[in-house]
Image 1 (cartoon, rainbow, N blue to C red):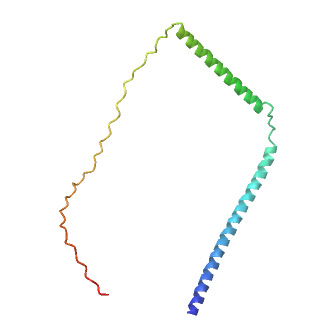
Image 2: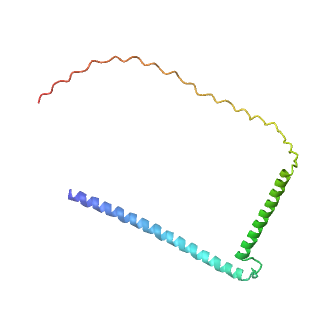
Image 3: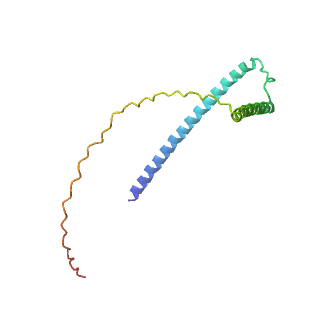
Length: 147
């Protein structure tokens, strides 16, 4: 029995150690790949930065500030509201003066009937079988148990 326990413990320890080695190898391999990728990316970016320094400088003096952009937006909204107010006032004045506006003739377009789809037939159902009446059984007397 003692030998069996020792053998079981040795097998469990060996499996545990082997699994830990595999996990450690996978982690080390992944770390190497990540570091290689980071180094290659950094080298490529360093090469590109040299190219960027050779580009002409962009001047941003023509770009409006956020305050100027906000002011222009508010001017736009105020103008749109003013135009809407003027239009609405002209419509109301026209209605009050009794001017009639010729109604726009509506074009009636005949609606196309939707394409008929093939009617799906419900699967045929078998009629439910009628159950035969169940005869009631007489109660069974329990045998007395000897104690």
